[in-house]
Amino acid sequence: MDAVFAKIAKDTTKFALGDEEIWRELYEPFLPDPPSNVSVIRDERYGPAERNRLDIFVPHGDEANRPVMLYVHGGGFFSGDKLWTEKVYSNIGWFFAQHGIITAVTNHQLVPHVQYPGGADDMQLVREWIFNNVSSEKYGRGSVDKVILFGHSSGGAHVAMNLYAAGKRSVS
Image (spheres, rainbow, N blue to C red):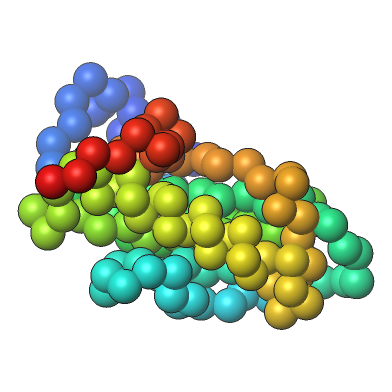
């Protein structure tokens, strides 16, 4: 951690495009290896766009009606990926699944290949996918009544835009 603290002390007030790789490389060695009590189903398609894919982290066991969490990565609307590396952002899925929460870690379309409200529309599609699929045995028998939506940075903005604009679509 000394290298991380030194980097924070040196560069804590500046951040440029591309610096995320420097920070990821500093922190990634501290992330745990995949746990043995969680299964991962990768690249499930939830919509028609190429990036409309999610990974599902399923806790082992036979419990039904488990809570479900959707995690949406950030990236300033123009970058990011659900599988930035084998550990980042899988560490989020593994953590919550180890605590009994089925976790979907999702991608969304990126600028310039999508315009507003494309990210919000992606969130609607992934929410519908969860509603239609997460209660199955394959995905851990989750409860559609216990879904938490969680996003980092632009991912949180997409979630908020989806919830705010729900049902208020205009026709072009």
